[in-house]
Length: 124
Image (cartoon, rainbow, N blue to C red; front, side):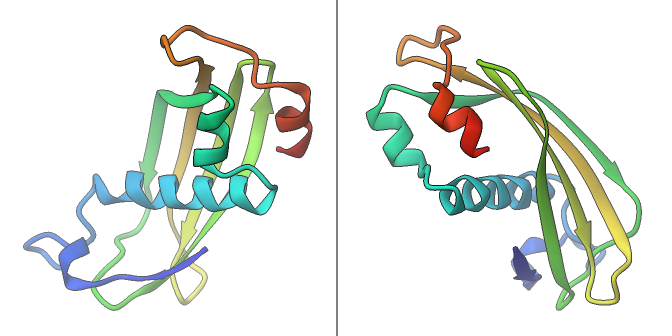
């Protein structure tokens, strides 16, 4: 996923505000799943909800206003109820700026862990 950094993404130092990286990871995960045929609304209709159980972020190099970043997403680990996504963010020069790891757990409408289904697991 590519994204241009706008002024509203940055802090008073003209650097992307640290919490915004979580939004970029979320956008990339959502697109990753949709590209494999599983949109969030479709999964919700099936009673499957993915909630963040753990988040790690490593800031390597600042992203600034007007930079164009690429957010790469891959599945690092998967089980019947858990997906671990790894993200990297590089700038327009190919420099590694941020690394992240997000652990999602599949739950039902009552918030209890539930298997995501073999079809979802295989697609990821």
